[in-house]
Image 1 (cartoon, each protein chain N blue to C red):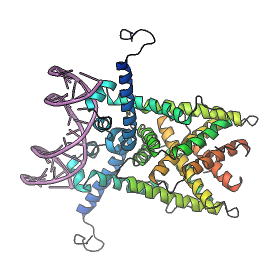
Image 2: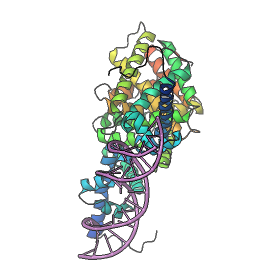
Image 3: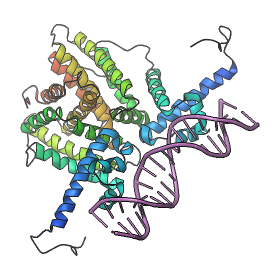
Length: 214
Length: 214
DNA sequence: GTCTATAAGGTGATAGAC
DNA sequence: GTCTATCACCTTATAGAC
């Protein structure tokens, strides 16, 4: 809360830089372990092994396992933006192209997809530490998609209820396809099915005018 | 494997009937606990408390926690059919009406929905005991839906790839909507959004001819 | 900042009495 | 069929040395 520890403006000690780096190492390792094993089955000990320290070291940096999870979730969003080289979310029809592109990218990184799929579903269990985070995340996504859909539908005005439902459906089919794909990568074409689903919803709302090619 | 313990044809002792009943009690309790807490967080001790016995009693009936999970998953399917009073799965367009009706029913039983949503996503974690079961289940569902879609599209022939993808999408949006709905029941209208999504895919495949009303 | 040691508690599974 | 008792193990978290 206070800045008692802050060094003179503009200067960051090598010590602090190393500490930040260590936190990042831990976050990356935790994302991998939580993704592969789930939050509950993934242990601090496993994560610590990946980083090359003991679990006490992790608790020194993050305080508790719950807190580590929340930081992992925040970190995941940033990593997503970096890899897509996107500085701000696109608007209107462009957003749906972006979603199809994301699906294509996701098909090349099962680890990250798994972390998201496992943790989001696990978060609906009673008293899960990530529950509020995911509730807010989904609410935010629905708002963004509903807004983009409204833009794409300019002239039709499908009604608030319909826009909201369509936004939920697009998010839902992307997430649901990821689970099926993770279980059987040969049987499900993640990018193709995602594009088909999104375009079906777009066509339904616009009468067949809007198409996302990715 | 052998029938060494089978009594004379047509006769079942009261002892055996009580044992079967006990197993059912355990399965119901396990479905509730695994649904609320996930497989990993849910413990045999919690389940035993609900039934009114100790966890050793559960292991007597099911052998191991993993085996109990698999039996719960099998049991869930049967319970579904009973509650919908369906003896066989409908075909063609009727199947999609059935899916919308199922969504409407599901909106009245978050516990069951949660057990399915949590366990299916948890199953994608490494070495999860339910993994093969869910892989087979999704494969079976995709086959059934693709077949029904082919029927509905009679005349258009959208191509195998397209049918399979559409089948995946319909299953995916239903599952994904459940997760969003579980996290925020006021923000998501499960039945309405499910109907919208299914009809969007149907319209996309049939050119707007087929509609599922539920 | 990282370690070792340990606390405090939960877990699934087994053995054997009744 | 259910119990009690126990095993062997794992977990998160804390305390304090270095």
